[in-house]
Image 1 (cartoon, rainbow, N blue to C red):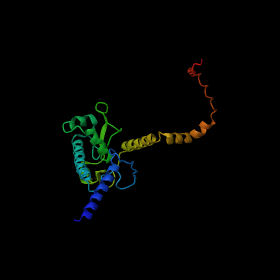
Image 2 (image 1 turned 90 degrees about the vertical axis):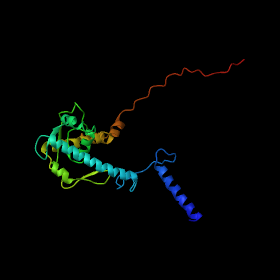
Image 3 (image 1 turned 60 degrees about the vertical axis):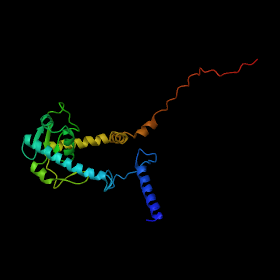
Image 4 (image 1 turned 45 degrees about the horizontal axis):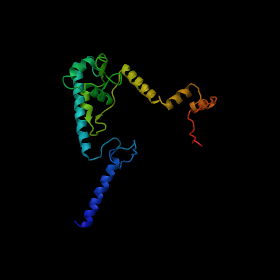
Amino acid sequence: MSARDTILRFNNVAAANDEKLKKNPFSDTYTLQNFDTNATDYGRPTSGSKTEARGIRASVHVCREMLYLCELIDQNADGEDPNRFIKFGKLFMIYSFYSDKLVGMLIRARKYGLLHFEGEMLYQRQDDNKNITMLYSLADIRERMKASGDPKNCVVMEGPPPVLPPDIRAAKEAEEEAAKQRKMSGAAGFAAISASKGAPPRMDRRSTLPAVPLPAAPPSFCMAFKPKTE
């Protein structure tokens, strides 16, 4: 390898390191990144990196954990397939002998449509009587749930979505509507609600208000310094 090739290789490594430092928020050369949320690599580690390999291994582990959770629910649940159910308090006591990550696994399983429960979070004692309802039979979960190999969406359910019972369908629709209302809680939501009631926009109403005169400035108690004259 000639000296020119060595210098070129060194410059390429230095340029690649500079690009990494620009994306590192702890470096002095960090620049604010603009991300395209519609890009295929958004929210995913760099392809071929060790981070991606760890994410793939973690996705397989999460898939096994969710399968074990569904098996545990099926063994101790009441009702008929595919919508067997169990109380959260009972499941908490059973699962605590295995792990303390029950709520996280339940939220993850609900994300991928394996089961359903009301509310965004579950708390011990407070939510002991809430039902954890399976949306698939255990045989369907074993057959259709696969590890996707994608660190962002680690599980994929093959086949059509489940047929939801009427009460669960109504609960999910209510939760979706509540989520929309929370998103509209800002200025856009205020404008939409005002428009639905026939009220003028906020800026128009503000412009029609009479001007309020400002109070006069209080007198200054600071006396100007005057030099002593003879």
